[in-house]
Length: 160
Image (tube, rainbow, N blue to C red; front, side, top):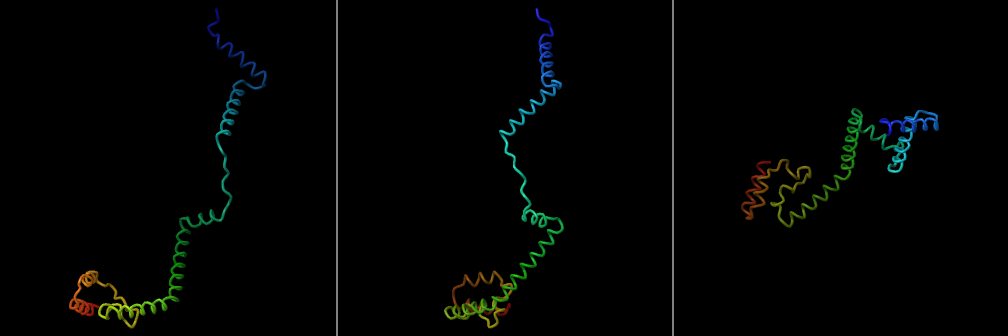
């Protein structure tokens, strides 16, 4: 009949053989083997990537997203866009207004000056009155007879 501690006696025998073969305690040998198996599994299933190299985009992102300098950069960009748009717009404003005035004169020749009265001005800065009431514009577009058109033009002349 076998001893009641039978499996533990055999295990102790194998532990001693491992210690003699490797020269270190058996639990260190088993831990090292587990670690080696885990590393092999990791290397087979994973791909190690390296962090991206320093790039100008990373530096720009850092400064643009900074909690203080980001707002400062945003203000400078808006100021630059504003100056660019109105600087270039100043050069092309004259030719565009001239083209628009020619178009209004041609349109006024076909439809009559009463129809294009609020567009037809000598000074192009007064071509469209500020705050043209939407209700009067809808009323003008919905009316079709010439008497209501003259009434509308008269009313608009008094309002503006």
